[in-house]
Image (tube, rainbow, N blue to C red):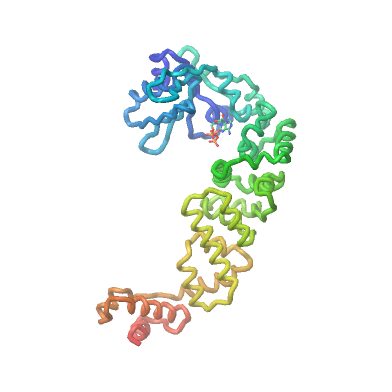
Length: 380
Ligand code: ATP
């Protein structure tokens, strides 16, 4: 469809960036980014006619469009020429640049290649900046030496790509990374963009190695302005492959004290579930420091999100307490519920909760071990 639309619109179309990199590396890739030499808006609209189930969103100021499909997948289209309207009804200001400039604005040489999709040049690699050679030699190299100053997220991206593909840094790129860290440019980074990049790291299989490098090169400390006890332990590598994003995040902050986690929360933008779980984690950890009865522990653990309990149960300080309580909870074999109590004549209301609680605690503490004893306990 892209090729046919390119013919129809008489413009050149390229697939660019990560797709080309991963194609040359023969690794699977998901996202497709296109660059159109010509009017991107017109191209996106013409392409939509061939993709009736897609939904088009255009971002005129950024010169980009996105077609989203019902299954959540999407195509991103950028253009080397886009019409800007400064106010409704104004004449379009047409900005022209070329593919070479578009590719120069990218982060690293390995991400700055394009493949032409037009029929007469189909499959032709456009590689102005030596991306293919850097891929072959396993190098992360920026395109110009103020790259990290222009956009500090590129420092985090550089480490992500290096650890993902087991690449090393080209010398000047590494030097520039350290210089950029020293100059404090990370302070320019918005909460949103930093968080986005950190979450991308946490989603990677190899996130522990990435986290370690972020700490070792001083980037995380420079960003926060103070040393934090991040936990990226390579001994967890095998296990962590199956961890959810929330578990990975909670585990990363698990060595920090509660006040540090709270101040970190002010500097990151997390979705509600992640933020709520982090707060729950702090509270539960603080409570577990107290001496608690089995029933108090059980109450806390049953109320807590599973991921919070999971991370605390891996912590040497709380491991023992939690496993004792979970073991005791296995004894619970409740057959009673609210409905059964109403049948037994208990009035609907708070009394039901209280009775169920009492019965659960009796199971937990080993005071009852049969259904008959459970019934007796409920009637007490
Ligand atoms: P991934 O496999 O992680 O999705 P990707 O390269 O596809 O990697 P995206 O974040 O989707 O990553 O970016 C698409 C392309 O946009 C990149 O390949 C790169 O060319 C360009 N790009 C992304 N972020 C930046 C940035 N901060 N500065 C310059 N170019 C960028």
